[in-house]
Image 1 (cartoon, helix red, strand yellow):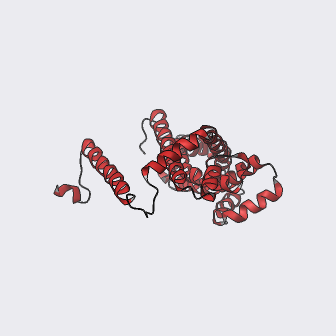
Image 2 (cartoon, one colour; image 1 turned 90 degrees about the vertical axis):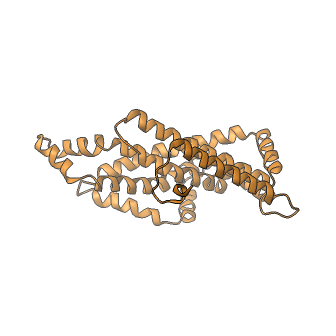
Image 3 (cartoon, rainbow, N blue to C red; image 1 turned 90 degrees about the horizontal axis):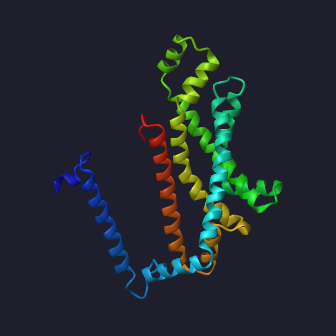
Length: 256
């Protein structure tokens, strides 16, 4: 028992599973006990269960599909733009542009959406480009950090093999760090999924999980809100696990 409270103690996979299950059981017990009275902070389990059934009856699957399509399309465009900015960062003429893009991550989200609405009037395109601009700044920052962390020995090794400057860029940065790009996408996907609901709650015309949360909050339906939070968490974990599995399958030599 003492080893469970010792920092950096190594335990078996089965033991970690048991500890995780114990914590899950404790959370559910605390939930049931905490919602037994007439006044409680969180909705009772039966209210959350009713929230699931009501959401399904109101087209939950369609709204999930809308949110996923917005997520994938936004991150696809953002990755293309971010890779372009990051891979041109070593070029002196284009380096200031790439670094300037990274500074946009300090802009407030509300102000960004205000200017996008002045240019784009279609609700769906508005959501997409708000997400793309927001994601591009963070993805570009992360990718440039990956490039900066490449050891100088790798560049020297490529030069001793007779590679010119462009071949070094291609072999060391583009091909040599492709697995890191997938890892950066995985890390930023959590931000994407989190901000997705906020964007959908701002521009509600296209539906989605953010639209459902906004409506549930409007009518103070706490059971539905908790149900939606559980759905969003599970989908986010599934997306993270999927990309993690993809990287391990494609790049067997790399470790996350």
